[in-house]
Length: 386
Ligand code: PMP
Image (cartoon, rainbow, N blue to C red):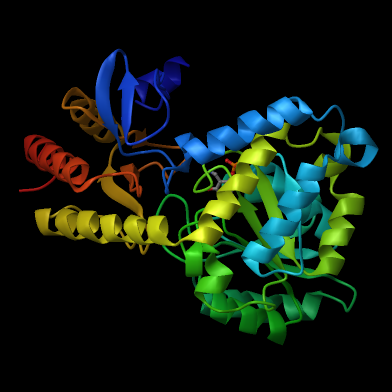
């Protein structure tokens, strides 16, 4: 702990005293929220709250068991069907969170003697799940399909016919906001007889028609074997999912350990997620607003002279370098009423500390202008922009 404190790497987190949204109360003070994953503002949506309340009245709260013993409520099956339709996938299985979905899926698909090809910036839940699987993990350079192909060629000699190969990539990279080259990945998967898995945690509700996600964005339906996702971000609730071919989803229902050995999603969470799907299917208004806000904010930040990396999405990494600087920047923003947490090691590499601004459809233009004004003032003060 002392060591972390001395290196400015101790994580301090704030307590929120109000509902989740663009406006928050923290330490008794009203601030504008620029760092939650509540992309569409659904976390406190009246229809979603009502759906959760009604479900509690009808079914209670806890699932009472794991799905395979006595924990499958009709809401779980309804949600899986609604998600399969939404994702235009053959089938969907739900999990308690996105992290769980990765832990469940990877060890069920590959094991000792198999090979995983993993983008070097993949999410921690993918990294942990790969380790859990006991398969050999080969990391390829971030987004670099030539490097991936090179690694396929190198391993071709060593791998025998029965070795399973799995390519895994985040869809949208959570700390940088860039997008995986999914069309090229599907081609490589086909050419080298590998399974392809993408984690669409930050694509759901953001990319594709009506926020259907990265597969829809690239129109690759049927070409991605496994699409992991989360309902903890744009859906405004908590939950995980895996969409894909029916055979694979059926297999996960038999073999995925968090499905077999951890209790099902709670009743209110499940009902809330179901309502979120209905809201997304009914209109793309929120998704459009999210993108309008994103372009407005990112263009202004670039004009101000900030380095916002290569983001192609509403994730805006304001690159600062040293953890100490990122923390000081975040503190000064907070003092001026803008809540945007500093992100430091181990979430990002040591010298790549940043403030990750998360844009939401719930921000008004006035909210965005206030944030821009604060970023400009603090940026000058700390010599980040000149
Ligand atoms: N995958 C990625 C790419 C993520 O960014 C996250 C959330 N940080 C997760 C999985 C985990 O999702 P959840 O919060 O639902 O566990």
